[in-house]
Image 1: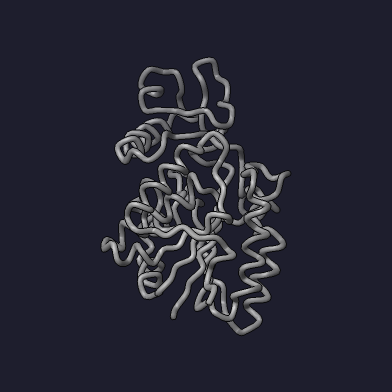
Image 2 (image 1 turned 30 degrees about the horizontal axis):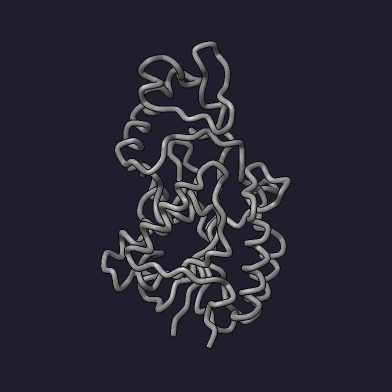
Length: 265
C-alpha cells in the first residue's frame, strides 16, 4: 500500500509562539507529526512538505497598500475591489493599482476568501521561513533510509496569494510557479492513502485539499485523503472557514482520523 504524508507549511512563523503569524495549537500539531513520522516512517512511500515562501513586497503585506489618509493597513485588514474603486484604499505605488484591482476582482469571483492583509511572514531566508526544528529532525531521520522529502515552495510571486500547494489563488499566466502543479497532483493520484496535516486548517491546508479534490474529481479518489485532525489548527478568527472546509470535504469523501489512528494495523 502506497501511503503519502503531506505536511502544509510547518514553519516557525506559524508553529512557534514567537512566530510572526503564530497559529495557536500548531506547536502541538508539530509534536504529533514528529511522533507520527517516527512511528510509521517505514510505511511512508513519500513525504511532501509545502513551504510558504514570501517576499516582503507582496500584495498581502501592509507595505503594498495605503488608506485615503496615507496609512498602511494593520494586519488582518480586509480590502475589497470596492474599497479601491471608492478610494478607501489604494496601492502604495500608482503603477500597481490597475493590476491589484484586477486581482481583487478575480479573487472575489472565486469566492473562497476576502483579501486579507497578513503580518510579514515566512520571508525567504529568514528564521521564520524554516521548518519547525522538531519536525525538521524527524524528517531528516526519515531521509536516513535514503529517501528524499519532496519540498514544494509557494508564495514568492508578489501579485497573488498562494495558499494552496497545488496552485495560486489567482494564477499568473506569466509565472508557471503559480499555475497548476500537475506533477504533484499526479503523484498523489498514484497513492492509496494520503495523510494530510499542517497549517493552517482554515487556509493553506484547506485550499490544498480543496484543489486536490477538485483535480481528482472522482469521489473514490477523494476518499484516499485522510485529514489528521489532531495535526492542524485554524488561524484565529477563521474557525468558521475551517469548519466549512472539514464539512464540505467530508461530504465529498475525505476521512477524519488522528495521528494515533494512522496506519494502525
